[in-house]
View 1 (cartoon, rainbow, N blue to C red):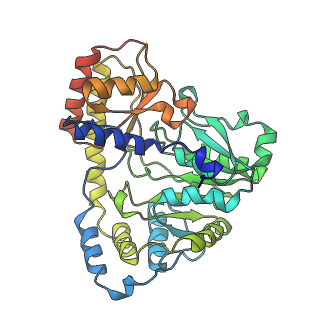
View 2: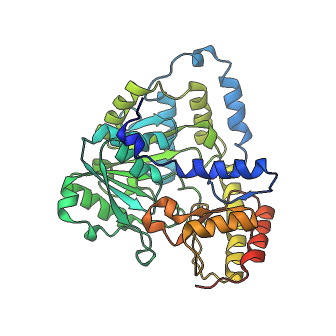
View 3: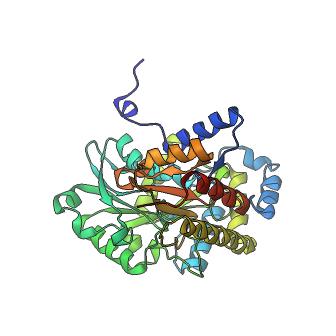
Amino acid sequence: MRESTAMQNLPPYLFARIEQKIAEAKEKGIDIISLGIGDPDQPTPKHIIDKMAESIYDAANHQYPSSVGLLAFRQAVANWYRCRFNVELDPRKEIVSLLGSKEGIAHISAAYLDHGDINLVPEPGYPVYGIGTSLAGGHPYIMPLLEKNKYLPVLEDIPEEVARKAKIFFMNYPNNPTGAVADLSFYEKVVEFARSYDLLVCSDAPYSEIAYDGLRPCSFLEARGAKEVGIEFHSLSKTYNMTGWRIGWAAGQAKAIEVLGRYKSNIDSGVFQAIQYAGIEALEGPQDSIEVMRAIYQERRDLALTWLTRLGWKITPPKASFYFWVPVPKGYTSSSFAEFILEKAGVIITPGNGYGKHGEGYFRIALTVDKSRIEEAFQRIEKVIGKVEF
């Protein structure tokens, strides 16, 4: 039986390939240090686990959940937005729960696109924006994110005929893979751009709580008029070390939330209620673990910056996220440098071209191993490359 054309054109997911490389190396007995996948290594805080343990014994949680999520969970999300961003949300109409934000990001295109429609997709960027667009029968129009523009899309460079045909404008700040942040003035420009061309803005913000040097990134929903034109995807994955729990949300424009919720009600049965109660505990319980997490990543960021500088890179440290976006040395492509470092140093880095053609010439480092392993990784890299040239 032949697979669909869309599936034939779908490449293996970037991080599935990285996971395969790690598994193959481990089978050979090689000690691999993975700086490739952005999966927090710290445990989920105990009070969240305890709430989950309590909730799984409640028989009421063993039945089908609401497809849009427990009202109590959506209320907790609304309370969090009010406290963190001073944004008011109606938990009944402006929030829908997700099986992790990745699921919602992939499905929003299916809920909005007709065959041949266009989405505006940042590049380098999270692959799911473009993949979701293509699987829905649409075409990604690439918005380059360049260092000279502080990794922000230049709205004026988008051709008017493209903007008029487009349905969705994807953006992601703090940014994966570059670590860039956006300010409120940029978000307000996006609101006006979306109004002009009848676009749905989809802001992806899972790294909002991972920032350095006292910075607290803003939310797109803080911008004037944002709820009239867009939604924001968020999750508990990075803030509370809950990547494996698969719980997140979309919040914002009521119509878009209803459309996404209606789509989801036809293809999944919602988030296991015990996990939603654990999510409530995460959002409303003690928040001291977040400061601990930030301090850990700050130390790791500063250590990685010291090493990169020592090895010859002149790089601006990321303001947020737990990634470094680093140019490859002279004589290498993104892929050849990643392969060289894996083969010679036993260190996994992510080639930048995995985030689109505008990622070529860079690689990404994830700070999701402890300081001793980061130190060892750079010691190994130093042995095989010495001081880099550009």
